[in-house]
Image (cartoon, rainbow, N blue to C red; front, top):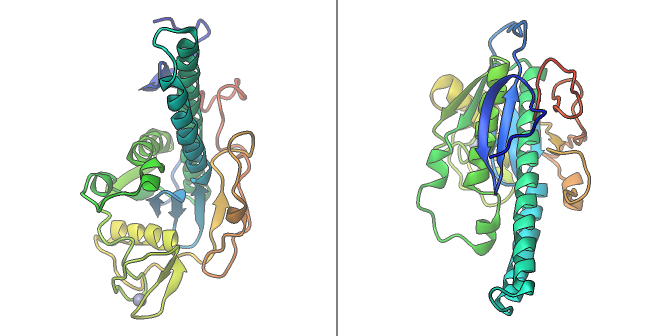
Length: 303
Ligand SMILES: [Zn+2]
């Protein structure tokens, strides 16, 4: 294995095996630790439509997962087409070799895009915690979500951003939060998406909006998930009436808009609980620094 000559100095935070390559995440020590003024909790709901929805019960940021999903879907289609073309070529032929290379290159690119989106999504979640002074972030234990037997999944679901991506997002979050002394606590997700934050009644949801059959409470579904996780984390169980879903949700994209990752037109019209959280994405200032663009930054190198 050959390492690049100009490798940044610092402590290795993570090594990841990608598609035919290894990613090294290197951190540099922060000279003076960030002081923690007080103890405050937040809840994070990791999901498909929003890669993450993070809330402290008042404010909420939704980090869109649509970009990643559409890239995946487009990629699956291209892959299928390539496979078909490949099957019509002779083994060992120049055409076959060329197609193999194309496939390999496409896989590597997909892997880079996924990794990029997940890192940025994690950075946004960290930024939320820093902005609102969260020192403990509760998230659902993904182990209980994806390995339990479910009814047969549709082809569409199988292509979606899956357990693998959620697991990686969680991994990134864990070390990124640790840098700022923020605790990342996983709790069982049981009933966190079904329980009414106001009255505690259980409703199985189908759409994007939570509607309680008992009390008539209405809110954005992911907001409900996040505050229930927060409630459960803080009190050991969901105590109805204590933390309601935030009225305003700020929508953020995990990456600045460019190239393959385009925002779907539906997203900009997305409304939570009747009140629109208008802001959308853009690169974060000061909170996230990437090694390449901020070489002199003492805080974080690499992603
Ligand atoms: Zn209710």
